[in-house]
Length: 564
Ligand SMILES: Cc1cc2nc3c(=O)[nH]c(=O)nc-3n(C[C@H](O)[C@H](O)[C@H](O)COP(=O)(O)OP(=O)(O)OC[C@H]3O[C@@H](n4cnc5c(N)ncnc54)[C@H](O)[C@@H]3O)c2cc1C
Image (cartoon, rainbow, N blue to C red; front, top):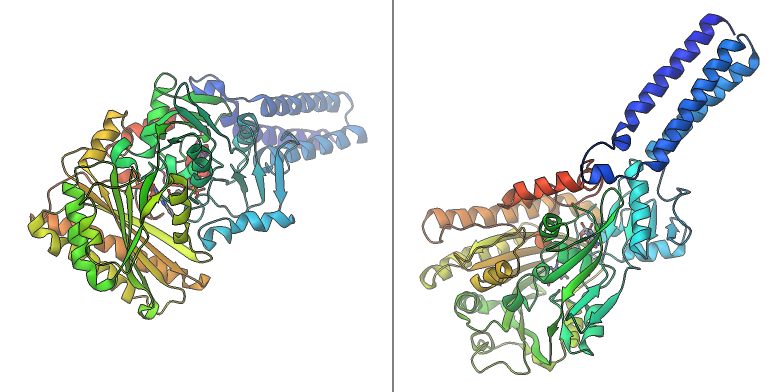
């Protein structure tokens, strides 16, 4: 090998090494504060120093033994080795990374159980995405191992709990690893502290099945099949929310694996900003491996569903308004929905009624029950029984989309006009797509009372940060369809539906029919195109905390969800 060739090879190697060095800088930064300083850089920095040592040896060896075949081969070997290591460091997959311990179950695409896990989404659109593998960490330490490898490569990934979020890419992923929390399924009640430690791998019915026997309840989902992980991080509307606030106001501690792979406890006394930001902050701050929730004493409840024909709309909307503003009993809770399918095969109202006690005081739900339901299955039962019986609302398989809006409650005089326009707009949106096979449309009206806002604040507040200046009604819209190629049509229909609803709220506010109010979107009902954080007045705080705990953007840029 000539001097020139040798110098050229050395220069190329230097350039490659410099590029390698630059590419590794984000991982090598250790002189910051907070999480950056805590970053575990061991594997990458070791690789890096080994490459530099090899390069130095090669260059020295080259200088001493110019023109020898051995040095040429050494250089080729080192260059190739460097590139391979570089490629592995940057794009290596957590699915096959040797540093992932063999105790972590990993499903490959070829595994028979892979398909089963993919069927385990509410929306078929999420199940249709094909992750490169599915990992099942069963301890926080195993989760930390996974996160450390992710932090050292560039894979897109997803974190999945119950899989009920229908937005593609939020708890589902195509071509990257899916981290299932299934095996983090602890439910441990501690009587002395009246708390329950709950893993994100549970569904609400799993949790309540254990707790019913202990005479306690946690503030969680209203339908048993929904997952713990996503519901809590999105706020969590419960039948118990009028009494205790959002589910997330009842979290005493989060156990979290941060972007740098450290495991921390977030509570009022440990990482308090992280604790607050996680409350309706979604998956932006880390992977929660356990929630310590307040346990509330629980006996028999009264509840069920009442079904009405479509012609009862006006009476039911009036009853909804009055209940939201006037019901004095925080043990009483409702969720009112209207359901429509093509050709009017189904055109009904379904109202979920709940009372936290064996019998509601006379008059509590009269405005609904006296409207003359087709079906009324309300009765005294256990909390678990009610949650699991509500699973009838989880209909599969279909492609689903979900969106939301928030409105102040109109006064009695304006109620028929205001709520009527919302209801008509929803029906009109349905008409525009009624030809779509498998179409099922739902609108839910959910009271979000001043009382709930007060409870949320008195229990430490959250990112939603509701005030008690007005009573509100949360509106949620769901569409389903059967065929994947109808997705663009349904996407456009959903945008028209929620944009139109927002326009109506604004119009009624401008006309003085509704009071001015802070109207955040509710994360757990939001469509992927809706700007959840943009509607929060806490967004600056959310960003500041994100920058401290995820400075490299692992969760901000590499996994789906609402981002700031
Ligand atoms: C039939 C039905 C009923 C519903 N009922 C209610 C209700 O009563 N009250 C209510 O508030 N909402 C309700 N929802 C909305 C529901 O809360 C959201 O869809 C929520 O995201 C579902 O949680 P999951 O764990 O099943 O979701 P997943 O789809 O598994 O996850 C949702 C999001 O949370 C993230 N995530 C999940 N676990 C973790 C974790 N451990 N760490 C970090 N990020 C995580 C995921 O990455 C994803 O972005 C309902 C939805 C459906 C479909």
